[in-house]
Image 1 (cartoon, rainbow, N blue to C red):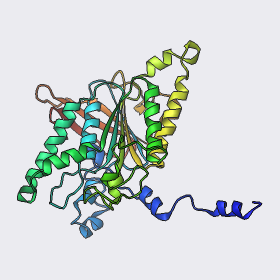
Image 2: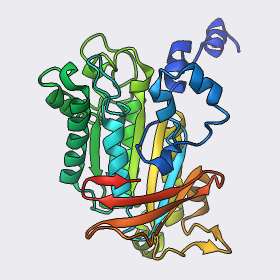
Image 3: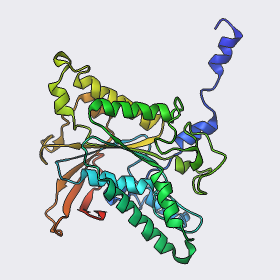
Image 4: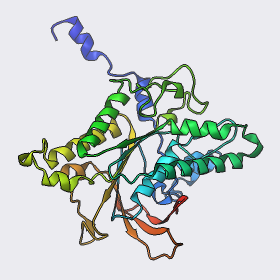
Length: 348
């Protein structure tokens, strides 16, 4: 340090305490899925806290695995309900968390970005599922719900949701890099990723002075962000067959290493909860001696912090429904559960 300016630049804070707290103090995102949220887990050790705060229902509801900074991978064969699970998570996460008129939808008011690599995302099903949740919440509120609340909640919830259709793994990388730039304030996305200044917070995370619902203004929980990627390995075999010496600009190791770095940055720097699905050819693929073995490059495997394995259940269900079992691979001590995929969503 040769000058006073050098010394001042060295001791200058990289961010204020307020900005750090806004970035760090983000609650888990509720999914509404028992095997993800872990309903009932840890209640003995937290019984005293729950008794002390028994008026706060959201504390019990947001025990979940979707904690900012974590990367959850859901693995299963084709048709095991992976896309339906992501659709349910997206619907629940984007719903308004709480309102002054007594309407409680059990949502998280989260900004949600859905990257569709498989082309299986059913937009109409997502909209129908979300609308039904809103209708149920308004009906439970009864006379307390003012007229027009259903349409208002629907519009507000949909404004926080973005779908990105990926046709190659490089499209996934572009989308993640754009998210990093938008959430970091490097570019103005103009609300493309569900974060508008009118919703209580600007694209750079600073507070907005106008607009937004009462539940969003001044509430750090409204800064919850969720990134969902359906079938991260959709282009794996194509990319593997098109290595650099066959004309591809990047080999498969570099592509998945870049994806892992970008997702870890979104999870840590921007406090986003990441959920990624991955298709396998069979229920036993990757299992060796009862332990899961990933077929993706090691850089990707090291980035994943949580993993759920899906398999079919022998439970009898109605025609057109699918019954499955969710088992936690990482961490192993978490309890999984059964679920059923229906036209109305996931039933646990």
